[in-house]
Amino acid sequence: MPVITLDQLPFGQQALITRLTENAAPFRRKLLAMGITPGCYLRVIRVAPLGDPIEIEMRGFHLCLRKTEASAIAVEACRI
Image 1 (cartoon, helix red, strand yellow):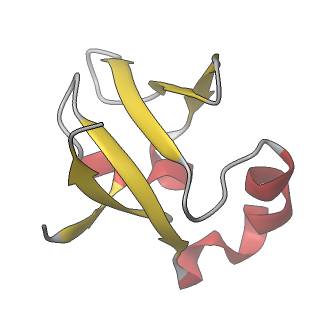
Image 2 (cartoon, rainbow, N blue to C red):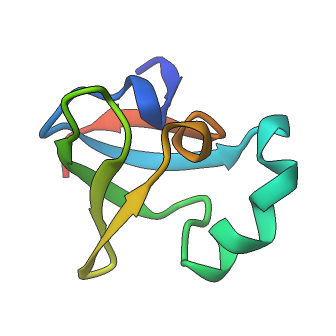
Image 3 (tube, helix red, strand yellow):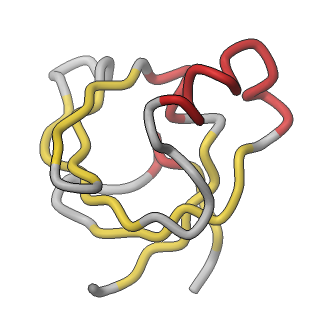
């Protein structure tokens, strides 16, 4: 499966976090503190009409991310 960023993942798709990109530097600690770590599975629950924010479900909770934050998370689309 190709590696893409979370902001490119379609609605309802499940994915595996592979890494945080170089663009994550300004908010890397924030993402890690929220549990966004490589090896974690997630699912896109919904996307706002203009694409920002994006709601995801991971580790049993829902989380909303800005599009800039989501673009810093590399994921691999998969089926859980």
